[in-house]
Length: 241
Image (cartoon, rainbow, N blue to C red; front, side, top):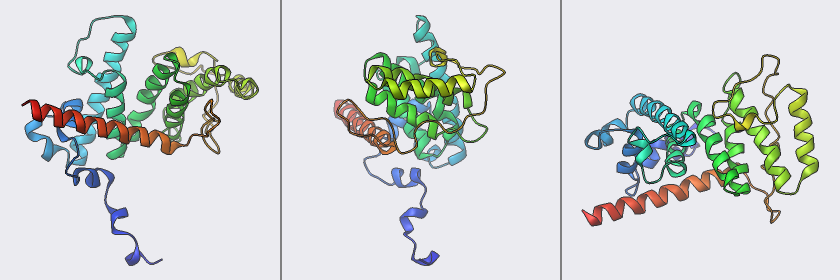
């Protein structure tokens, strides 16, 4: 296929396609990213400014989540968002995906994976483990990737796949990775640990209890569901106004 015959839509950035939709929740995204609502339309069309806003919102989210996990009172507007922490984190992941800003994804997705695991939602936890690992570029946030891999051991054990859990646990030990690394809110690797090798998701994310295999697309479908909910919330706010 020649370049001229390529699908023009494929050449448009994901955030530009999203912003072109009449139902895109500009107000909700601006609020999560800390952008002045009156400037939202302009800022969200500026890739550099939006990525800086995503960086700042991601840092604020992690700080607020640290407070939550430590039992401290909320100190930021982001922490008071009615969807905090999971819905707010999902919105940040959605923005990072649309503006192709992968560097903030691993740590936030790991927090969400932990929340789902602790809530007993193993399939969703495994999905976000996969999102962590596919978002780590070579030389990137290897600690989050390994932490997600250690969480996967726990998910597989509880999901009734001890053989695979043991296989991954042995791989962690061979790379000098602590089995409980996932418990650290800000994981760091021991000095003798080895480089991240891509994880255990070749061929897809582990099966759910109903034996249906998940894929990375399931995670993005979940993001789409969140955006749909955000649009409904925005419409409800406009009706109330």
